[in-house]
Length: 97
Image 1 (cartoon, rainbow, N blue to C red):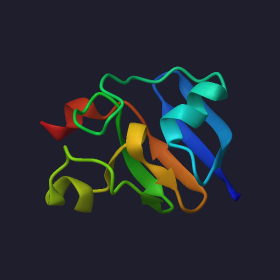
Image 2: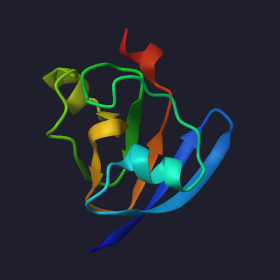
Image 3: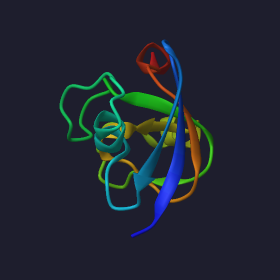
Image 4: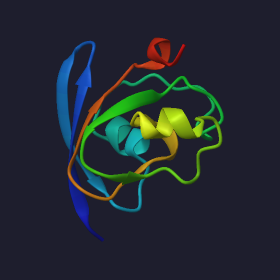
């Protein structure tokens, strides 16, 4: 198992934790004691949406974001796996609309 460094830019300030490559970012953040917004935990809503600032991830399990939103680097953290070290801005739901 590989671990990646994830830095979140949250409304409460920055938070950093190590995320296994086989665990969703939201789940790893919660295990690190970081409170994040979420609702469905299935990639079918926008409650946990963030914006990728740096790095790469796999969110093929999501079914909510359209191609343009993905191209604009929006991510559903409840169904996203880190594939490199990341910087992600959280709580971006209002930016989608």
